[in-house]
Amino acid sequence: MPDAYALPIYFNIAGPCIPERHYMTPALARLPEAQRLALEGHYFVIHAARQSGKTTLLQALTNMINAQDKFYALYCSLESLQGVSEPADGINGIFGALRQAIVQWSPVEAVRAAWPESVFQMTNTIVSETLSRLSALFG
Image (cartoon, rainbow, N blue to C red; front, side):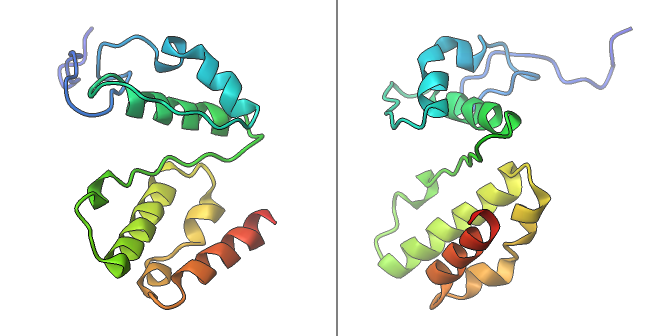
């Protein structure tokens, strides 16, 4: 019996696709070479038209890499900072986006717990504090 409260699946035309909610071809199947490049530690560029699946692909790669428990990948978008012109605002925005990404995407509770909101409010020590915490966790 169908769930009366389930959201209908539809074709998404704005923002990242969610396989459980949107009709789509599997993101990783559309660019299988990206998996190999990522797992081998290569740099690569994804260049495509708007609304073609770049974000969906990057999020799928992040999930795939983290599921293998060999590397740690984090998806972080800085798109909201396009109009920022002041360096101090930009740095705060970057670390705000980084913290949001850590909380949203990190599969490891210890990683999320290592970055309380107060860390990102310390503008004078934000870079050194963040790098020190990363080094302590993964170094």
